[in-house]
Length: 233
Ligand code: ADE
Image (cartoon, rainbow, N blue to C red; front, side):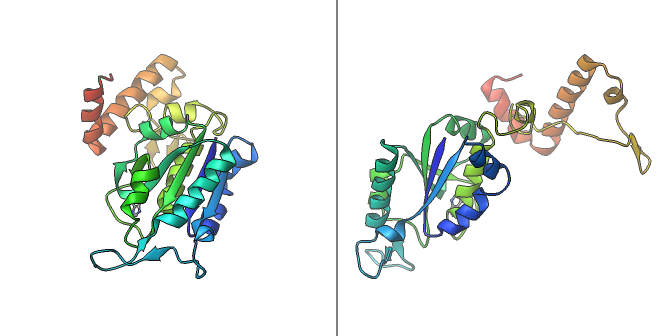
């Protein structure tokens, strides 16, 4: 999979995705990530990317031209028109389900906004989807773009050690993960649930499923309601 990030701060993106699991995915050839500075595509000699809003108001807006030309450059590089995502607090909140769907695409391009936003005509012309990472406002789209890149990268086949690592984890089946324990069997007077020491796989699986349900009911009842809507067990 190839991800292209359109940003005013390419270094900020590059340092993060060369580390950790995304770094491993890049080194293993499962993921390519490129950060493009759309300032390089500005058509004026001061290389400006923003201007004041028509109709007045506080702050500056990103102009359509540099971002559009940068996008066309990326389309030419990859030889097609990729799925284009704009990171914005106005977007649909990102879910594990959407992450999984996006990880099945060959290419995505992610636009990071700044200042008071982007000229609406640019959004109309090239953006396929607006994505938010939660109901709060950040100073720019770089951190959200990195959140999306990380979440997608770990879903690519062969990036995590074992597929079970995400099949069983929190949010995958719409439930939170069951509690986990490692050695020693007793720590500060606290013991590990007996069933986990039994070696009885069916009982362990049943216990874990029940714990996942209990835990989700306690911490995130909204997720259980959504599962019922989807007809999951
Ligand atoms: N840009 C600023 N805030 C954001 C958010 N919450 N999600 C995505 N992009 C953003």
